[in-house]
Image (cartoon, rainbow, N blue to C red; front, side, top):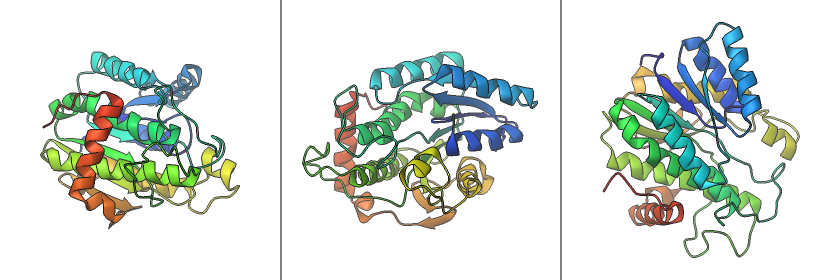
Length: 277
């Protein structure tokens, strides 16, 4: 892969997203960095430029508001002629600093499902024509081995709410939807893969919730960077990785009926129009 190609990273102002952006900047990638705080994004872009890297483009959106996701996608489509890699990285954990009680997004959806899954689902569909026009392109979903099966009768967890369950459900939804999208796309156009980058990296979310880390941030960056750039994975699609190991996700992700049900529910919840059959 030509590393000067355009790469969009969501949640790029700290943690894994920022560290991945720093690695890709060294490679010479043409970066588009997403965050919620424009001032923080501007400082990061200035720092990259001061170190001799190309100054990244920056885009802002609160992923708890799907209208902002649509606006961001439109801004990207209007400002770049190609997009070679989309890294859906932004998300919130199962507890602190976002709380353990049930909260809802601007659209009325359970917050963790909305931010961790629905925003990325909508952004992916909004940018899919641009990705396909830039073939060969890649979609990388930063998920987790912490997965919980989806209860389609209680998808918004209005009953028996638990933050860890909500997080695990949102991450399994990412993986399951990724498998479905991969099955609908020719691998020589766009590949779609998901991964658990590392366990309890020293990120803001992890430190706020459990107070210590297990794996290093560099381990997570290496695993994610590999899916985004490794030429050996050019035709690999529809897979889930634990760090760099090809492994199996929760069994529900391989259930064709569940995958289709999630796909249809996601289109309805986001009011998206699928560019695919």
